[in-house]
Structure formats: structure tokens, C-alpha cells
Amino acid sequence: MAPINDHPGEQAADEPIKLLAIRDTPLSLDEVFRAVGDDAAGGTALFVGTVRNHDGGADVDKLGYSYHPSAEAEMRRVAEKVVAGFPVRALAAVHRVGDLGVGDLAVVVAVSCPHRGEAFEACRKLIDDLKHEVPIWKHQTFSDGTEEWVGAC
Image (cartoon, rainbow, N blue to C red; front, side):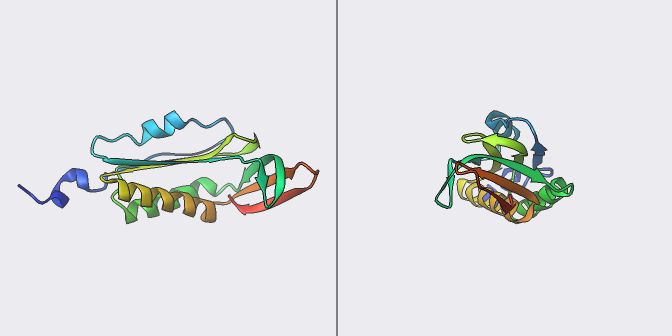
């Protein structure tokens, strides 16, 4: 029997990036989860970012996301970097833009890999790099009437 690492299912898929999008419509957990389904994946990690009702000690009423025209290309670059660093079977990332209310889904990312540890690490890298490298900006409106722009993502 061949060593486990020689099995094709232990390797990254040939085209693992299944879904990348920036949308002004509500996001679907089911869509992202289905996109990363792979029979060779033993682990799938999913991260969901939601609009919370507070930030920095202040109550948040709503927020809006806007993005630079290069954001989708930057999202692909980040995804390709994750794929290069992990044995990714499938990867998906969708970010919402426009006006969102407390509890709305702002971002959903998922990664499937042969094993759970790889899936967790790859998913963490994906969301962290998206947050820091993709030009998406958040405009928060607080309950006291003040507002604030927050850097990338």
C-alpha cells in the first residue's frame, strides 16, 4: 500500500477556488458550504462574520461596507496564496457590501482540506488575510449619532 501522502485525495485539488464574490445581497451559508463540498475532504472549516451591536465600547446601530474596484482581484490573490500554502480541496469566500443591520452576515468563508487541522489553519489564514489585504471599508453608525470609518474590511 502506498504512503498516505501519495494518495490524490491528500493533495490540493487542481482548481480549488470554487466561489469568490462581493455582493450587495444577503449571503447564504448553504451556498458557501455547498461550494466547498469535496469527497476527499475530511475537514471543512467555515467562518461567518456578522454585524455586532457594539464596537469599542459604543453601541452600533448599523454599518455599511464599500469597496475599491480592485477588491475582487485582491480577494482572488489572497485565495491563491491560501491555496499555495495548504492542501486545499475547495475554497469559497463571499463578502457583503452596502447597508447592513445588526445580526446580518457580512462575510462567509470556507475551506475544505484532507484533514481538520489543515482546514482550520487555511480558513483562519483566508479570513485574516481578507480582512487585512482586500480593500473593503466599513462605515459604522453608533447609537449616539456618531460615525466611524474602519480600514480594510
